[in-house]
Image (cartoon, rainbow, N blue to C red; front, top):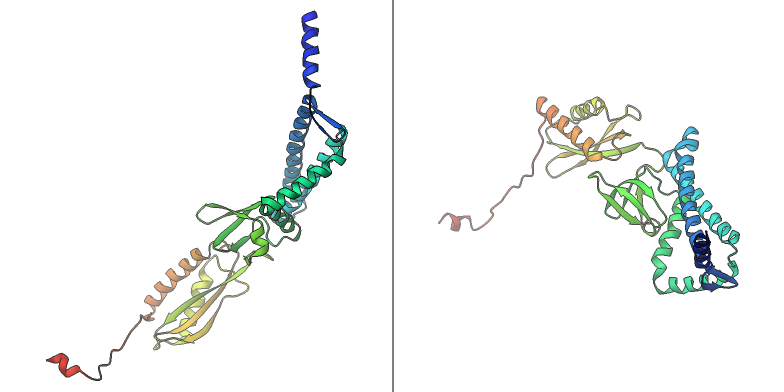
Length: 291
């Protein structure tokens, strides 16, 4: 019994061992362990609340996925921030001492944390203003893909080749971003088609419209249409314009389907597809060449 009491006395002495002082607060081993466990639980619970909010509560209200994710992330950050201050106050930490810590962080930002701070603030702007949302099809720089995650520092984009690209949040604020589905997942694509000068434009228009209307990925409304685009060097050029929601994230697949069928129909109806031609005129020196 005495040995057991000695053990608990020794253990209590270890927990009360002072490591350093922050303001008027003494940070002991026990206090640091308590803070570590509390912060771990805080992050776990905040993520659990975010998932419930996004996947159950907001989903029942038929809020679109991008908005749900933004609201859930903002709520998570608020819970974490409020929880940190609550835990520190509950454990008797002198918050006034954090003024010195804030000053040190400010110096750190000045010496090399600008990018991290910039990306974090940019992430908050993205979540609040929603220029991009989870599920959007975007282009930024040379990156083209679907937004699958927006975190505090970066945004994850998934390409059609199933490659995840991590883009710093500041790039979405500082650079031009093309969002194909910002307002709605309905996009019009333009596909150029050229035929020989001897072909009837009305016949070509009819074939292009029949091909597009037969494709299940092309919307019936708004209707597809064909523009007489230009007189080229070797062809008369048309522009087939179609609307789609199914192929927003894979326009090349739709283009391939239409072009395969257009080539087939042109062959069946004897519509000539031109190829580059050059006429060579020899004005002088031809006699020397013959000799």
